[in-house]
Image (tube, rainbow, N blue to C red; front, side, top):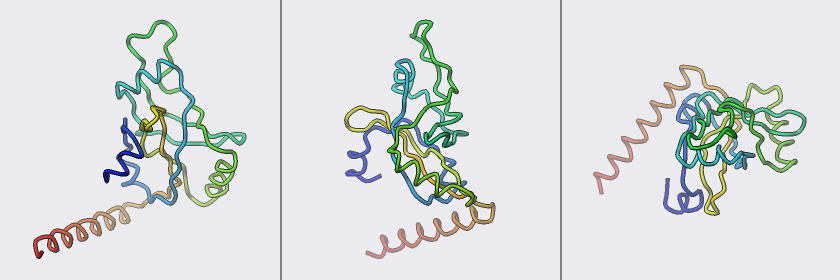
Length: 158
């Protein structure tokens, strides 16, 4: 990640590493999250896992499914459920646009990473993605390795 990108995004809490390997990313969006106080404190400690999570749209609202935010240990009896459904904050026209792109095309909506923006708000980067087959994954790895070798040789040449 380049320096200007890091300044714009803020502190990254967690990244869904499997997402870019298992899916071809078509379009990315930034969304806010509706969270409770104990969830925010747990996220600040880095107790988040986006591994098997996905985004679904119900009744013109976007929700994050299966995102695990561990319970905050210092919280009282007002603790949250770790895998509860969390509403995403997107503009209505963005939700309609995403829903239209996902309908019947073999695509899905997945979370890529969760981070704090420069103002201290928790944001999640979601993407419209298409699943890769095994041979496509191998081809992508091969292309990445070839590109990396070429860059290395160019660097040594200069």
